[in-house]
Length: 283
Image 1 (tube, one colour):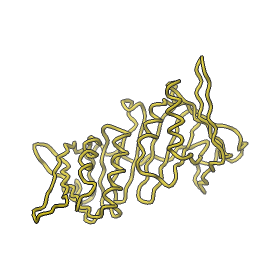
Image 2 (image 1 turned 180 degrees about the vertical axis):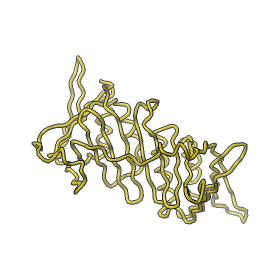
Image 3 (image 1 turned 90 degrees about the vertical axis):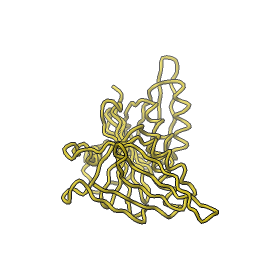
Image 4 (image 1 turned 60 degrees about the vertical axis):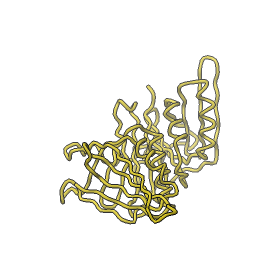
């Protein structure tokens, strides 16, 4: 197995850093998947994660100037590895004004992703900062855990208000309750609600718009319903806040899909990155 890649454009480098920073805010460890044309950051919905899962996809051609991959075999030209997202994020912090960034799969006592950052230098001698990030290469027989999650058969799909606005609201609610009910309808309306023995607070958003999913079968269940009818899901407020507070990608749109009483599915859409995040309902 071999992997090496190089990035020269500072705009791409900073964008890539923002994506990795976002991932590191969402999860301590994740799986990095590499194919000839994509990079994936994946978190499977294990019970240890409280059922939360994530799928982030980047087109390598948008970010990297060079990208060479030899996977586990010619037939399966891919590599999957576990790593601490925070370590990658920390390595990239040194790269915000770098001349170039190289990433390579190496073997130093254990498999590592080696990040080499070439910094601007006043002399002819180049300054390179190297970080070795230990990884666990995942054998082919376990790859089935890393398939793109299908869009759930949702009851409501709605665009979110600006994430910063939503984050400020949820942050204030966190001081009052551990759980929050997120409800929305097909009329572009969404409410965030908390209810305790002492207090009940609701924040209303309207005119958000509902995405049209065309022929996607997920809308079958919504065809004959009154657009005013609210569908809701009760979630752990900290998991929602982690998602809202971690964002550094500045997506053009964020879609929220609700499966009534079961799961909420967020999709962040940016021209080069898509990130899906699932939070299960609290029983």
